[in-house]
Each structure stands twice: as C-alpha cells, then as structure tokens.
Length: 294
Image 1 (cartoon, rainbow, N blue to C red):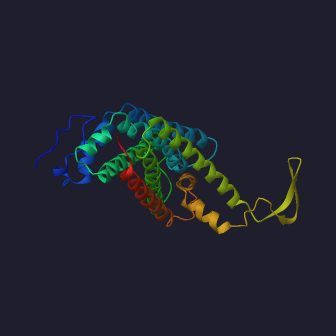
Image 2 (image 1 turned 180 degrees about the vertical axis):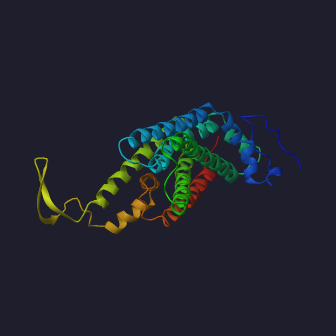
Image 3 (image 1 turned 90 degrees about the vertical axis):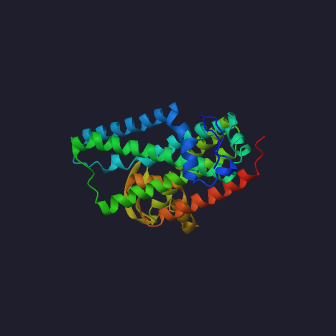
C-alpha cells in the first residue's frame, strides 16, 4: 500500500490508494499535527486554564463570606469555551485556504468528505481540550481551598457529557462557516459575531421565558409597589411553545443552562445538540462538495 509522504503543516492529505485508512488516522497525520504545533491553540489553552484558576480562587474568596461549593466554578466552562472556540477554529482551519492546503489534499486524491470530517474532528478536539483545561485548573486550585464539587455524580456526569456535546454542536456550526468561506478574516468575523449573537439571543429568550405571567404589584419610579396580581407585560404568551423549543435548540441556550446548573431539559439537550451537529454537518459537506477550490 502506497502512502504520500506527510512532511508537515502544508502537506497534502493521504492519496486515494490510502483512503482505506480510518478517518482518525488521517486526522492524526494532518490537522492534529498542526494543532500540536499551533501557538494560538496553546495560548488559548493557557487562557482557559488561567481563567479556571482565577474563578476557583474567586469562589474561595466568596466562601470566606458565606458557604459555597465549587460547582459553579467547575461548570461555567461552556460559556468561555464557546467563545474561545469561535476565535480559534476560523483562524486555525482558515489557514488551509490561505496556504492552499485544502486544494492540495483534494488534488492528491483525498475525498472532500474526509477533509471536512478531519477538520470537524480537529475543531471538536480543540474545544474539548479548552473545556478540560478549565475543569483541571478549577479542580487543582479549588479543591484544596474549598473542597471538590458537591454535586451528586448521577447529575454531574450527565451535565458534563451534555455540555461537551453542546460544544461539539458549536464546532459543527463554526466548521460549516469556515469550510465554505475562503477568506479567513471573514469566517473569523462571522464565527465571533455569530457566537455573541447566539449568546445574546439566548439571554433575551431566557429572560422572557422566565418572566411570570402575573406580578403582585407594579414598579413606579424605580420602586416596587405591592398590590393585587396583574398581567405581566413581559410574559411571553404568543408562540410560547415555539420559543421554548428554539431556546432548547440553541447551543448558546444550552451553554447558559449548563453553566447555571439549572437544566430543565437534561435528557433533551443532547438530542437537540446531535440534531444541530447532523444538520449543520450535512449542509456543510453538501456545500463543500460544490465549492470551487481554485
């Protein structure tokens, strides 16, 4: 069996004769090799770990005022990891266009599906490592100070696994953008702006959905005056079922819920995330197969 020599960052993918190898093997010899040597990746990984350590120490300071557990510091990582991933993926994968690596891989006989899958898996791996760096830092710094997380394992494990699937959904969306946009700067702008728009949309929907149908009083000149129950103008009544579904579907909403540890749809969130992964990857592959790489 013949293999194309893989010399480094701009080497083409495996030749068509070697496509019998598994996708993971192709990833390990290509994008993951570049990931290991990428300075931006290590910088963001260090930032994630440093932020986790800072949050853990902040929780220690709060524990001196009132009893507090490490749970909040531990599970906040989906909020930061989704932003780090939005920054990293377009800048890292976007180089494959600026360096003509993608065109070289396809010209060497590597299928477009395998190229797309390899980059998606690399994106997911980087996001997973950002999350892991945060969790390890919080555990190492926080446990000696205020003890390990107090949450029961039968809840903590599903929360952690579900949040990682949510991060994979973010990666699928970002990969869809990057693999079908030849300009690295444009894909970076779309991903970074997109993740903040998703987060703001989730925060707004959460606020509206949590608003009670009735309030026992009114606000006058910044002061709440108790009174009889009155309809709350902020209550979302029209199309409420649709907006509840939309909120549960958005990866940004799931990240907020996991970070707050107040997940109401713990069994459904992973299914919604898997749906986002399948649909966005299917659309991304279909578009990438039609893309002109010249």
